[in-house]
Length: 308
Image 1 (cartoon, rainbow, N blue to C red):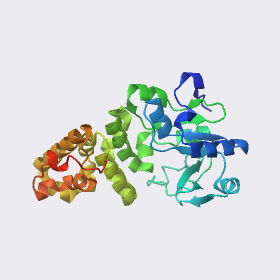
Image 2: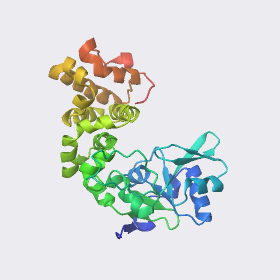
Image 3: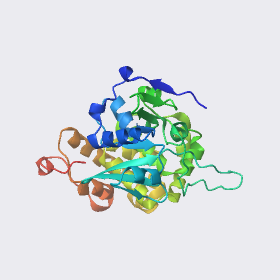
Image 4: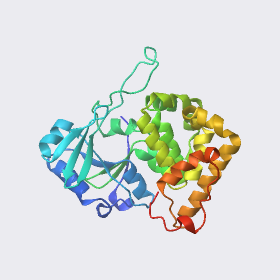
């Protein structure tokens, strides 16, 4: 058993005023039914960094069937990762049951990709099965403390993306984690921790074991979030462009990749000045070496309303 770092309410900036009302309703209802209930992951990370989170994840010791009994306005979704959606009008609050890591025998099974991730656990086991330390932070509705089992608070201060556990194992369990590492490193301007970095440089071909939909989703997020120019550079540096798009890479050549890099740098400059290009044009930037140069600067796109 690991002793967590527990930060009491007076010593952190996570406030209920920053949490959506529907989220609080679910948390308090779970508390009333004597269940543990936490806001977990990216929301706590972002609030600690001084940003307002886009969404909130709830984790609880209640199982999906128990959640269905507590919330009549709910439904169970997912197969590989079973969740419950609690519905408030047009809003669905996503609630996950605390989990533990799936056990495997590396001597018997070389394929570590997890097909079923529905082994229930507690807050400690749930923390250690998450992807990166900065995403394994819990806000406890009972006493409003922040709970940190994996050193995420310290890594936030240092600006590090660190895999929880052995990165060669954890990244093979879910190869999309490598793209998520790039996404967070680019978005926050963080550095990827040394062992995590080394594993990512060895394992880009593992990305073929992941869901194509999830891979495409993460690539799109990398190229449409802030600091997309650094995101593209990291995809290139770690070998994911070669692993995912070898024919495109061959046709582009190094000069073509430099052209795409320049495109994303210019798009980022436009975004920082409050001029957002249509997402279709941003996506088309990948094909510039094949289609010819497109001028993204100037008044022609200055009034576009599509945010990236």
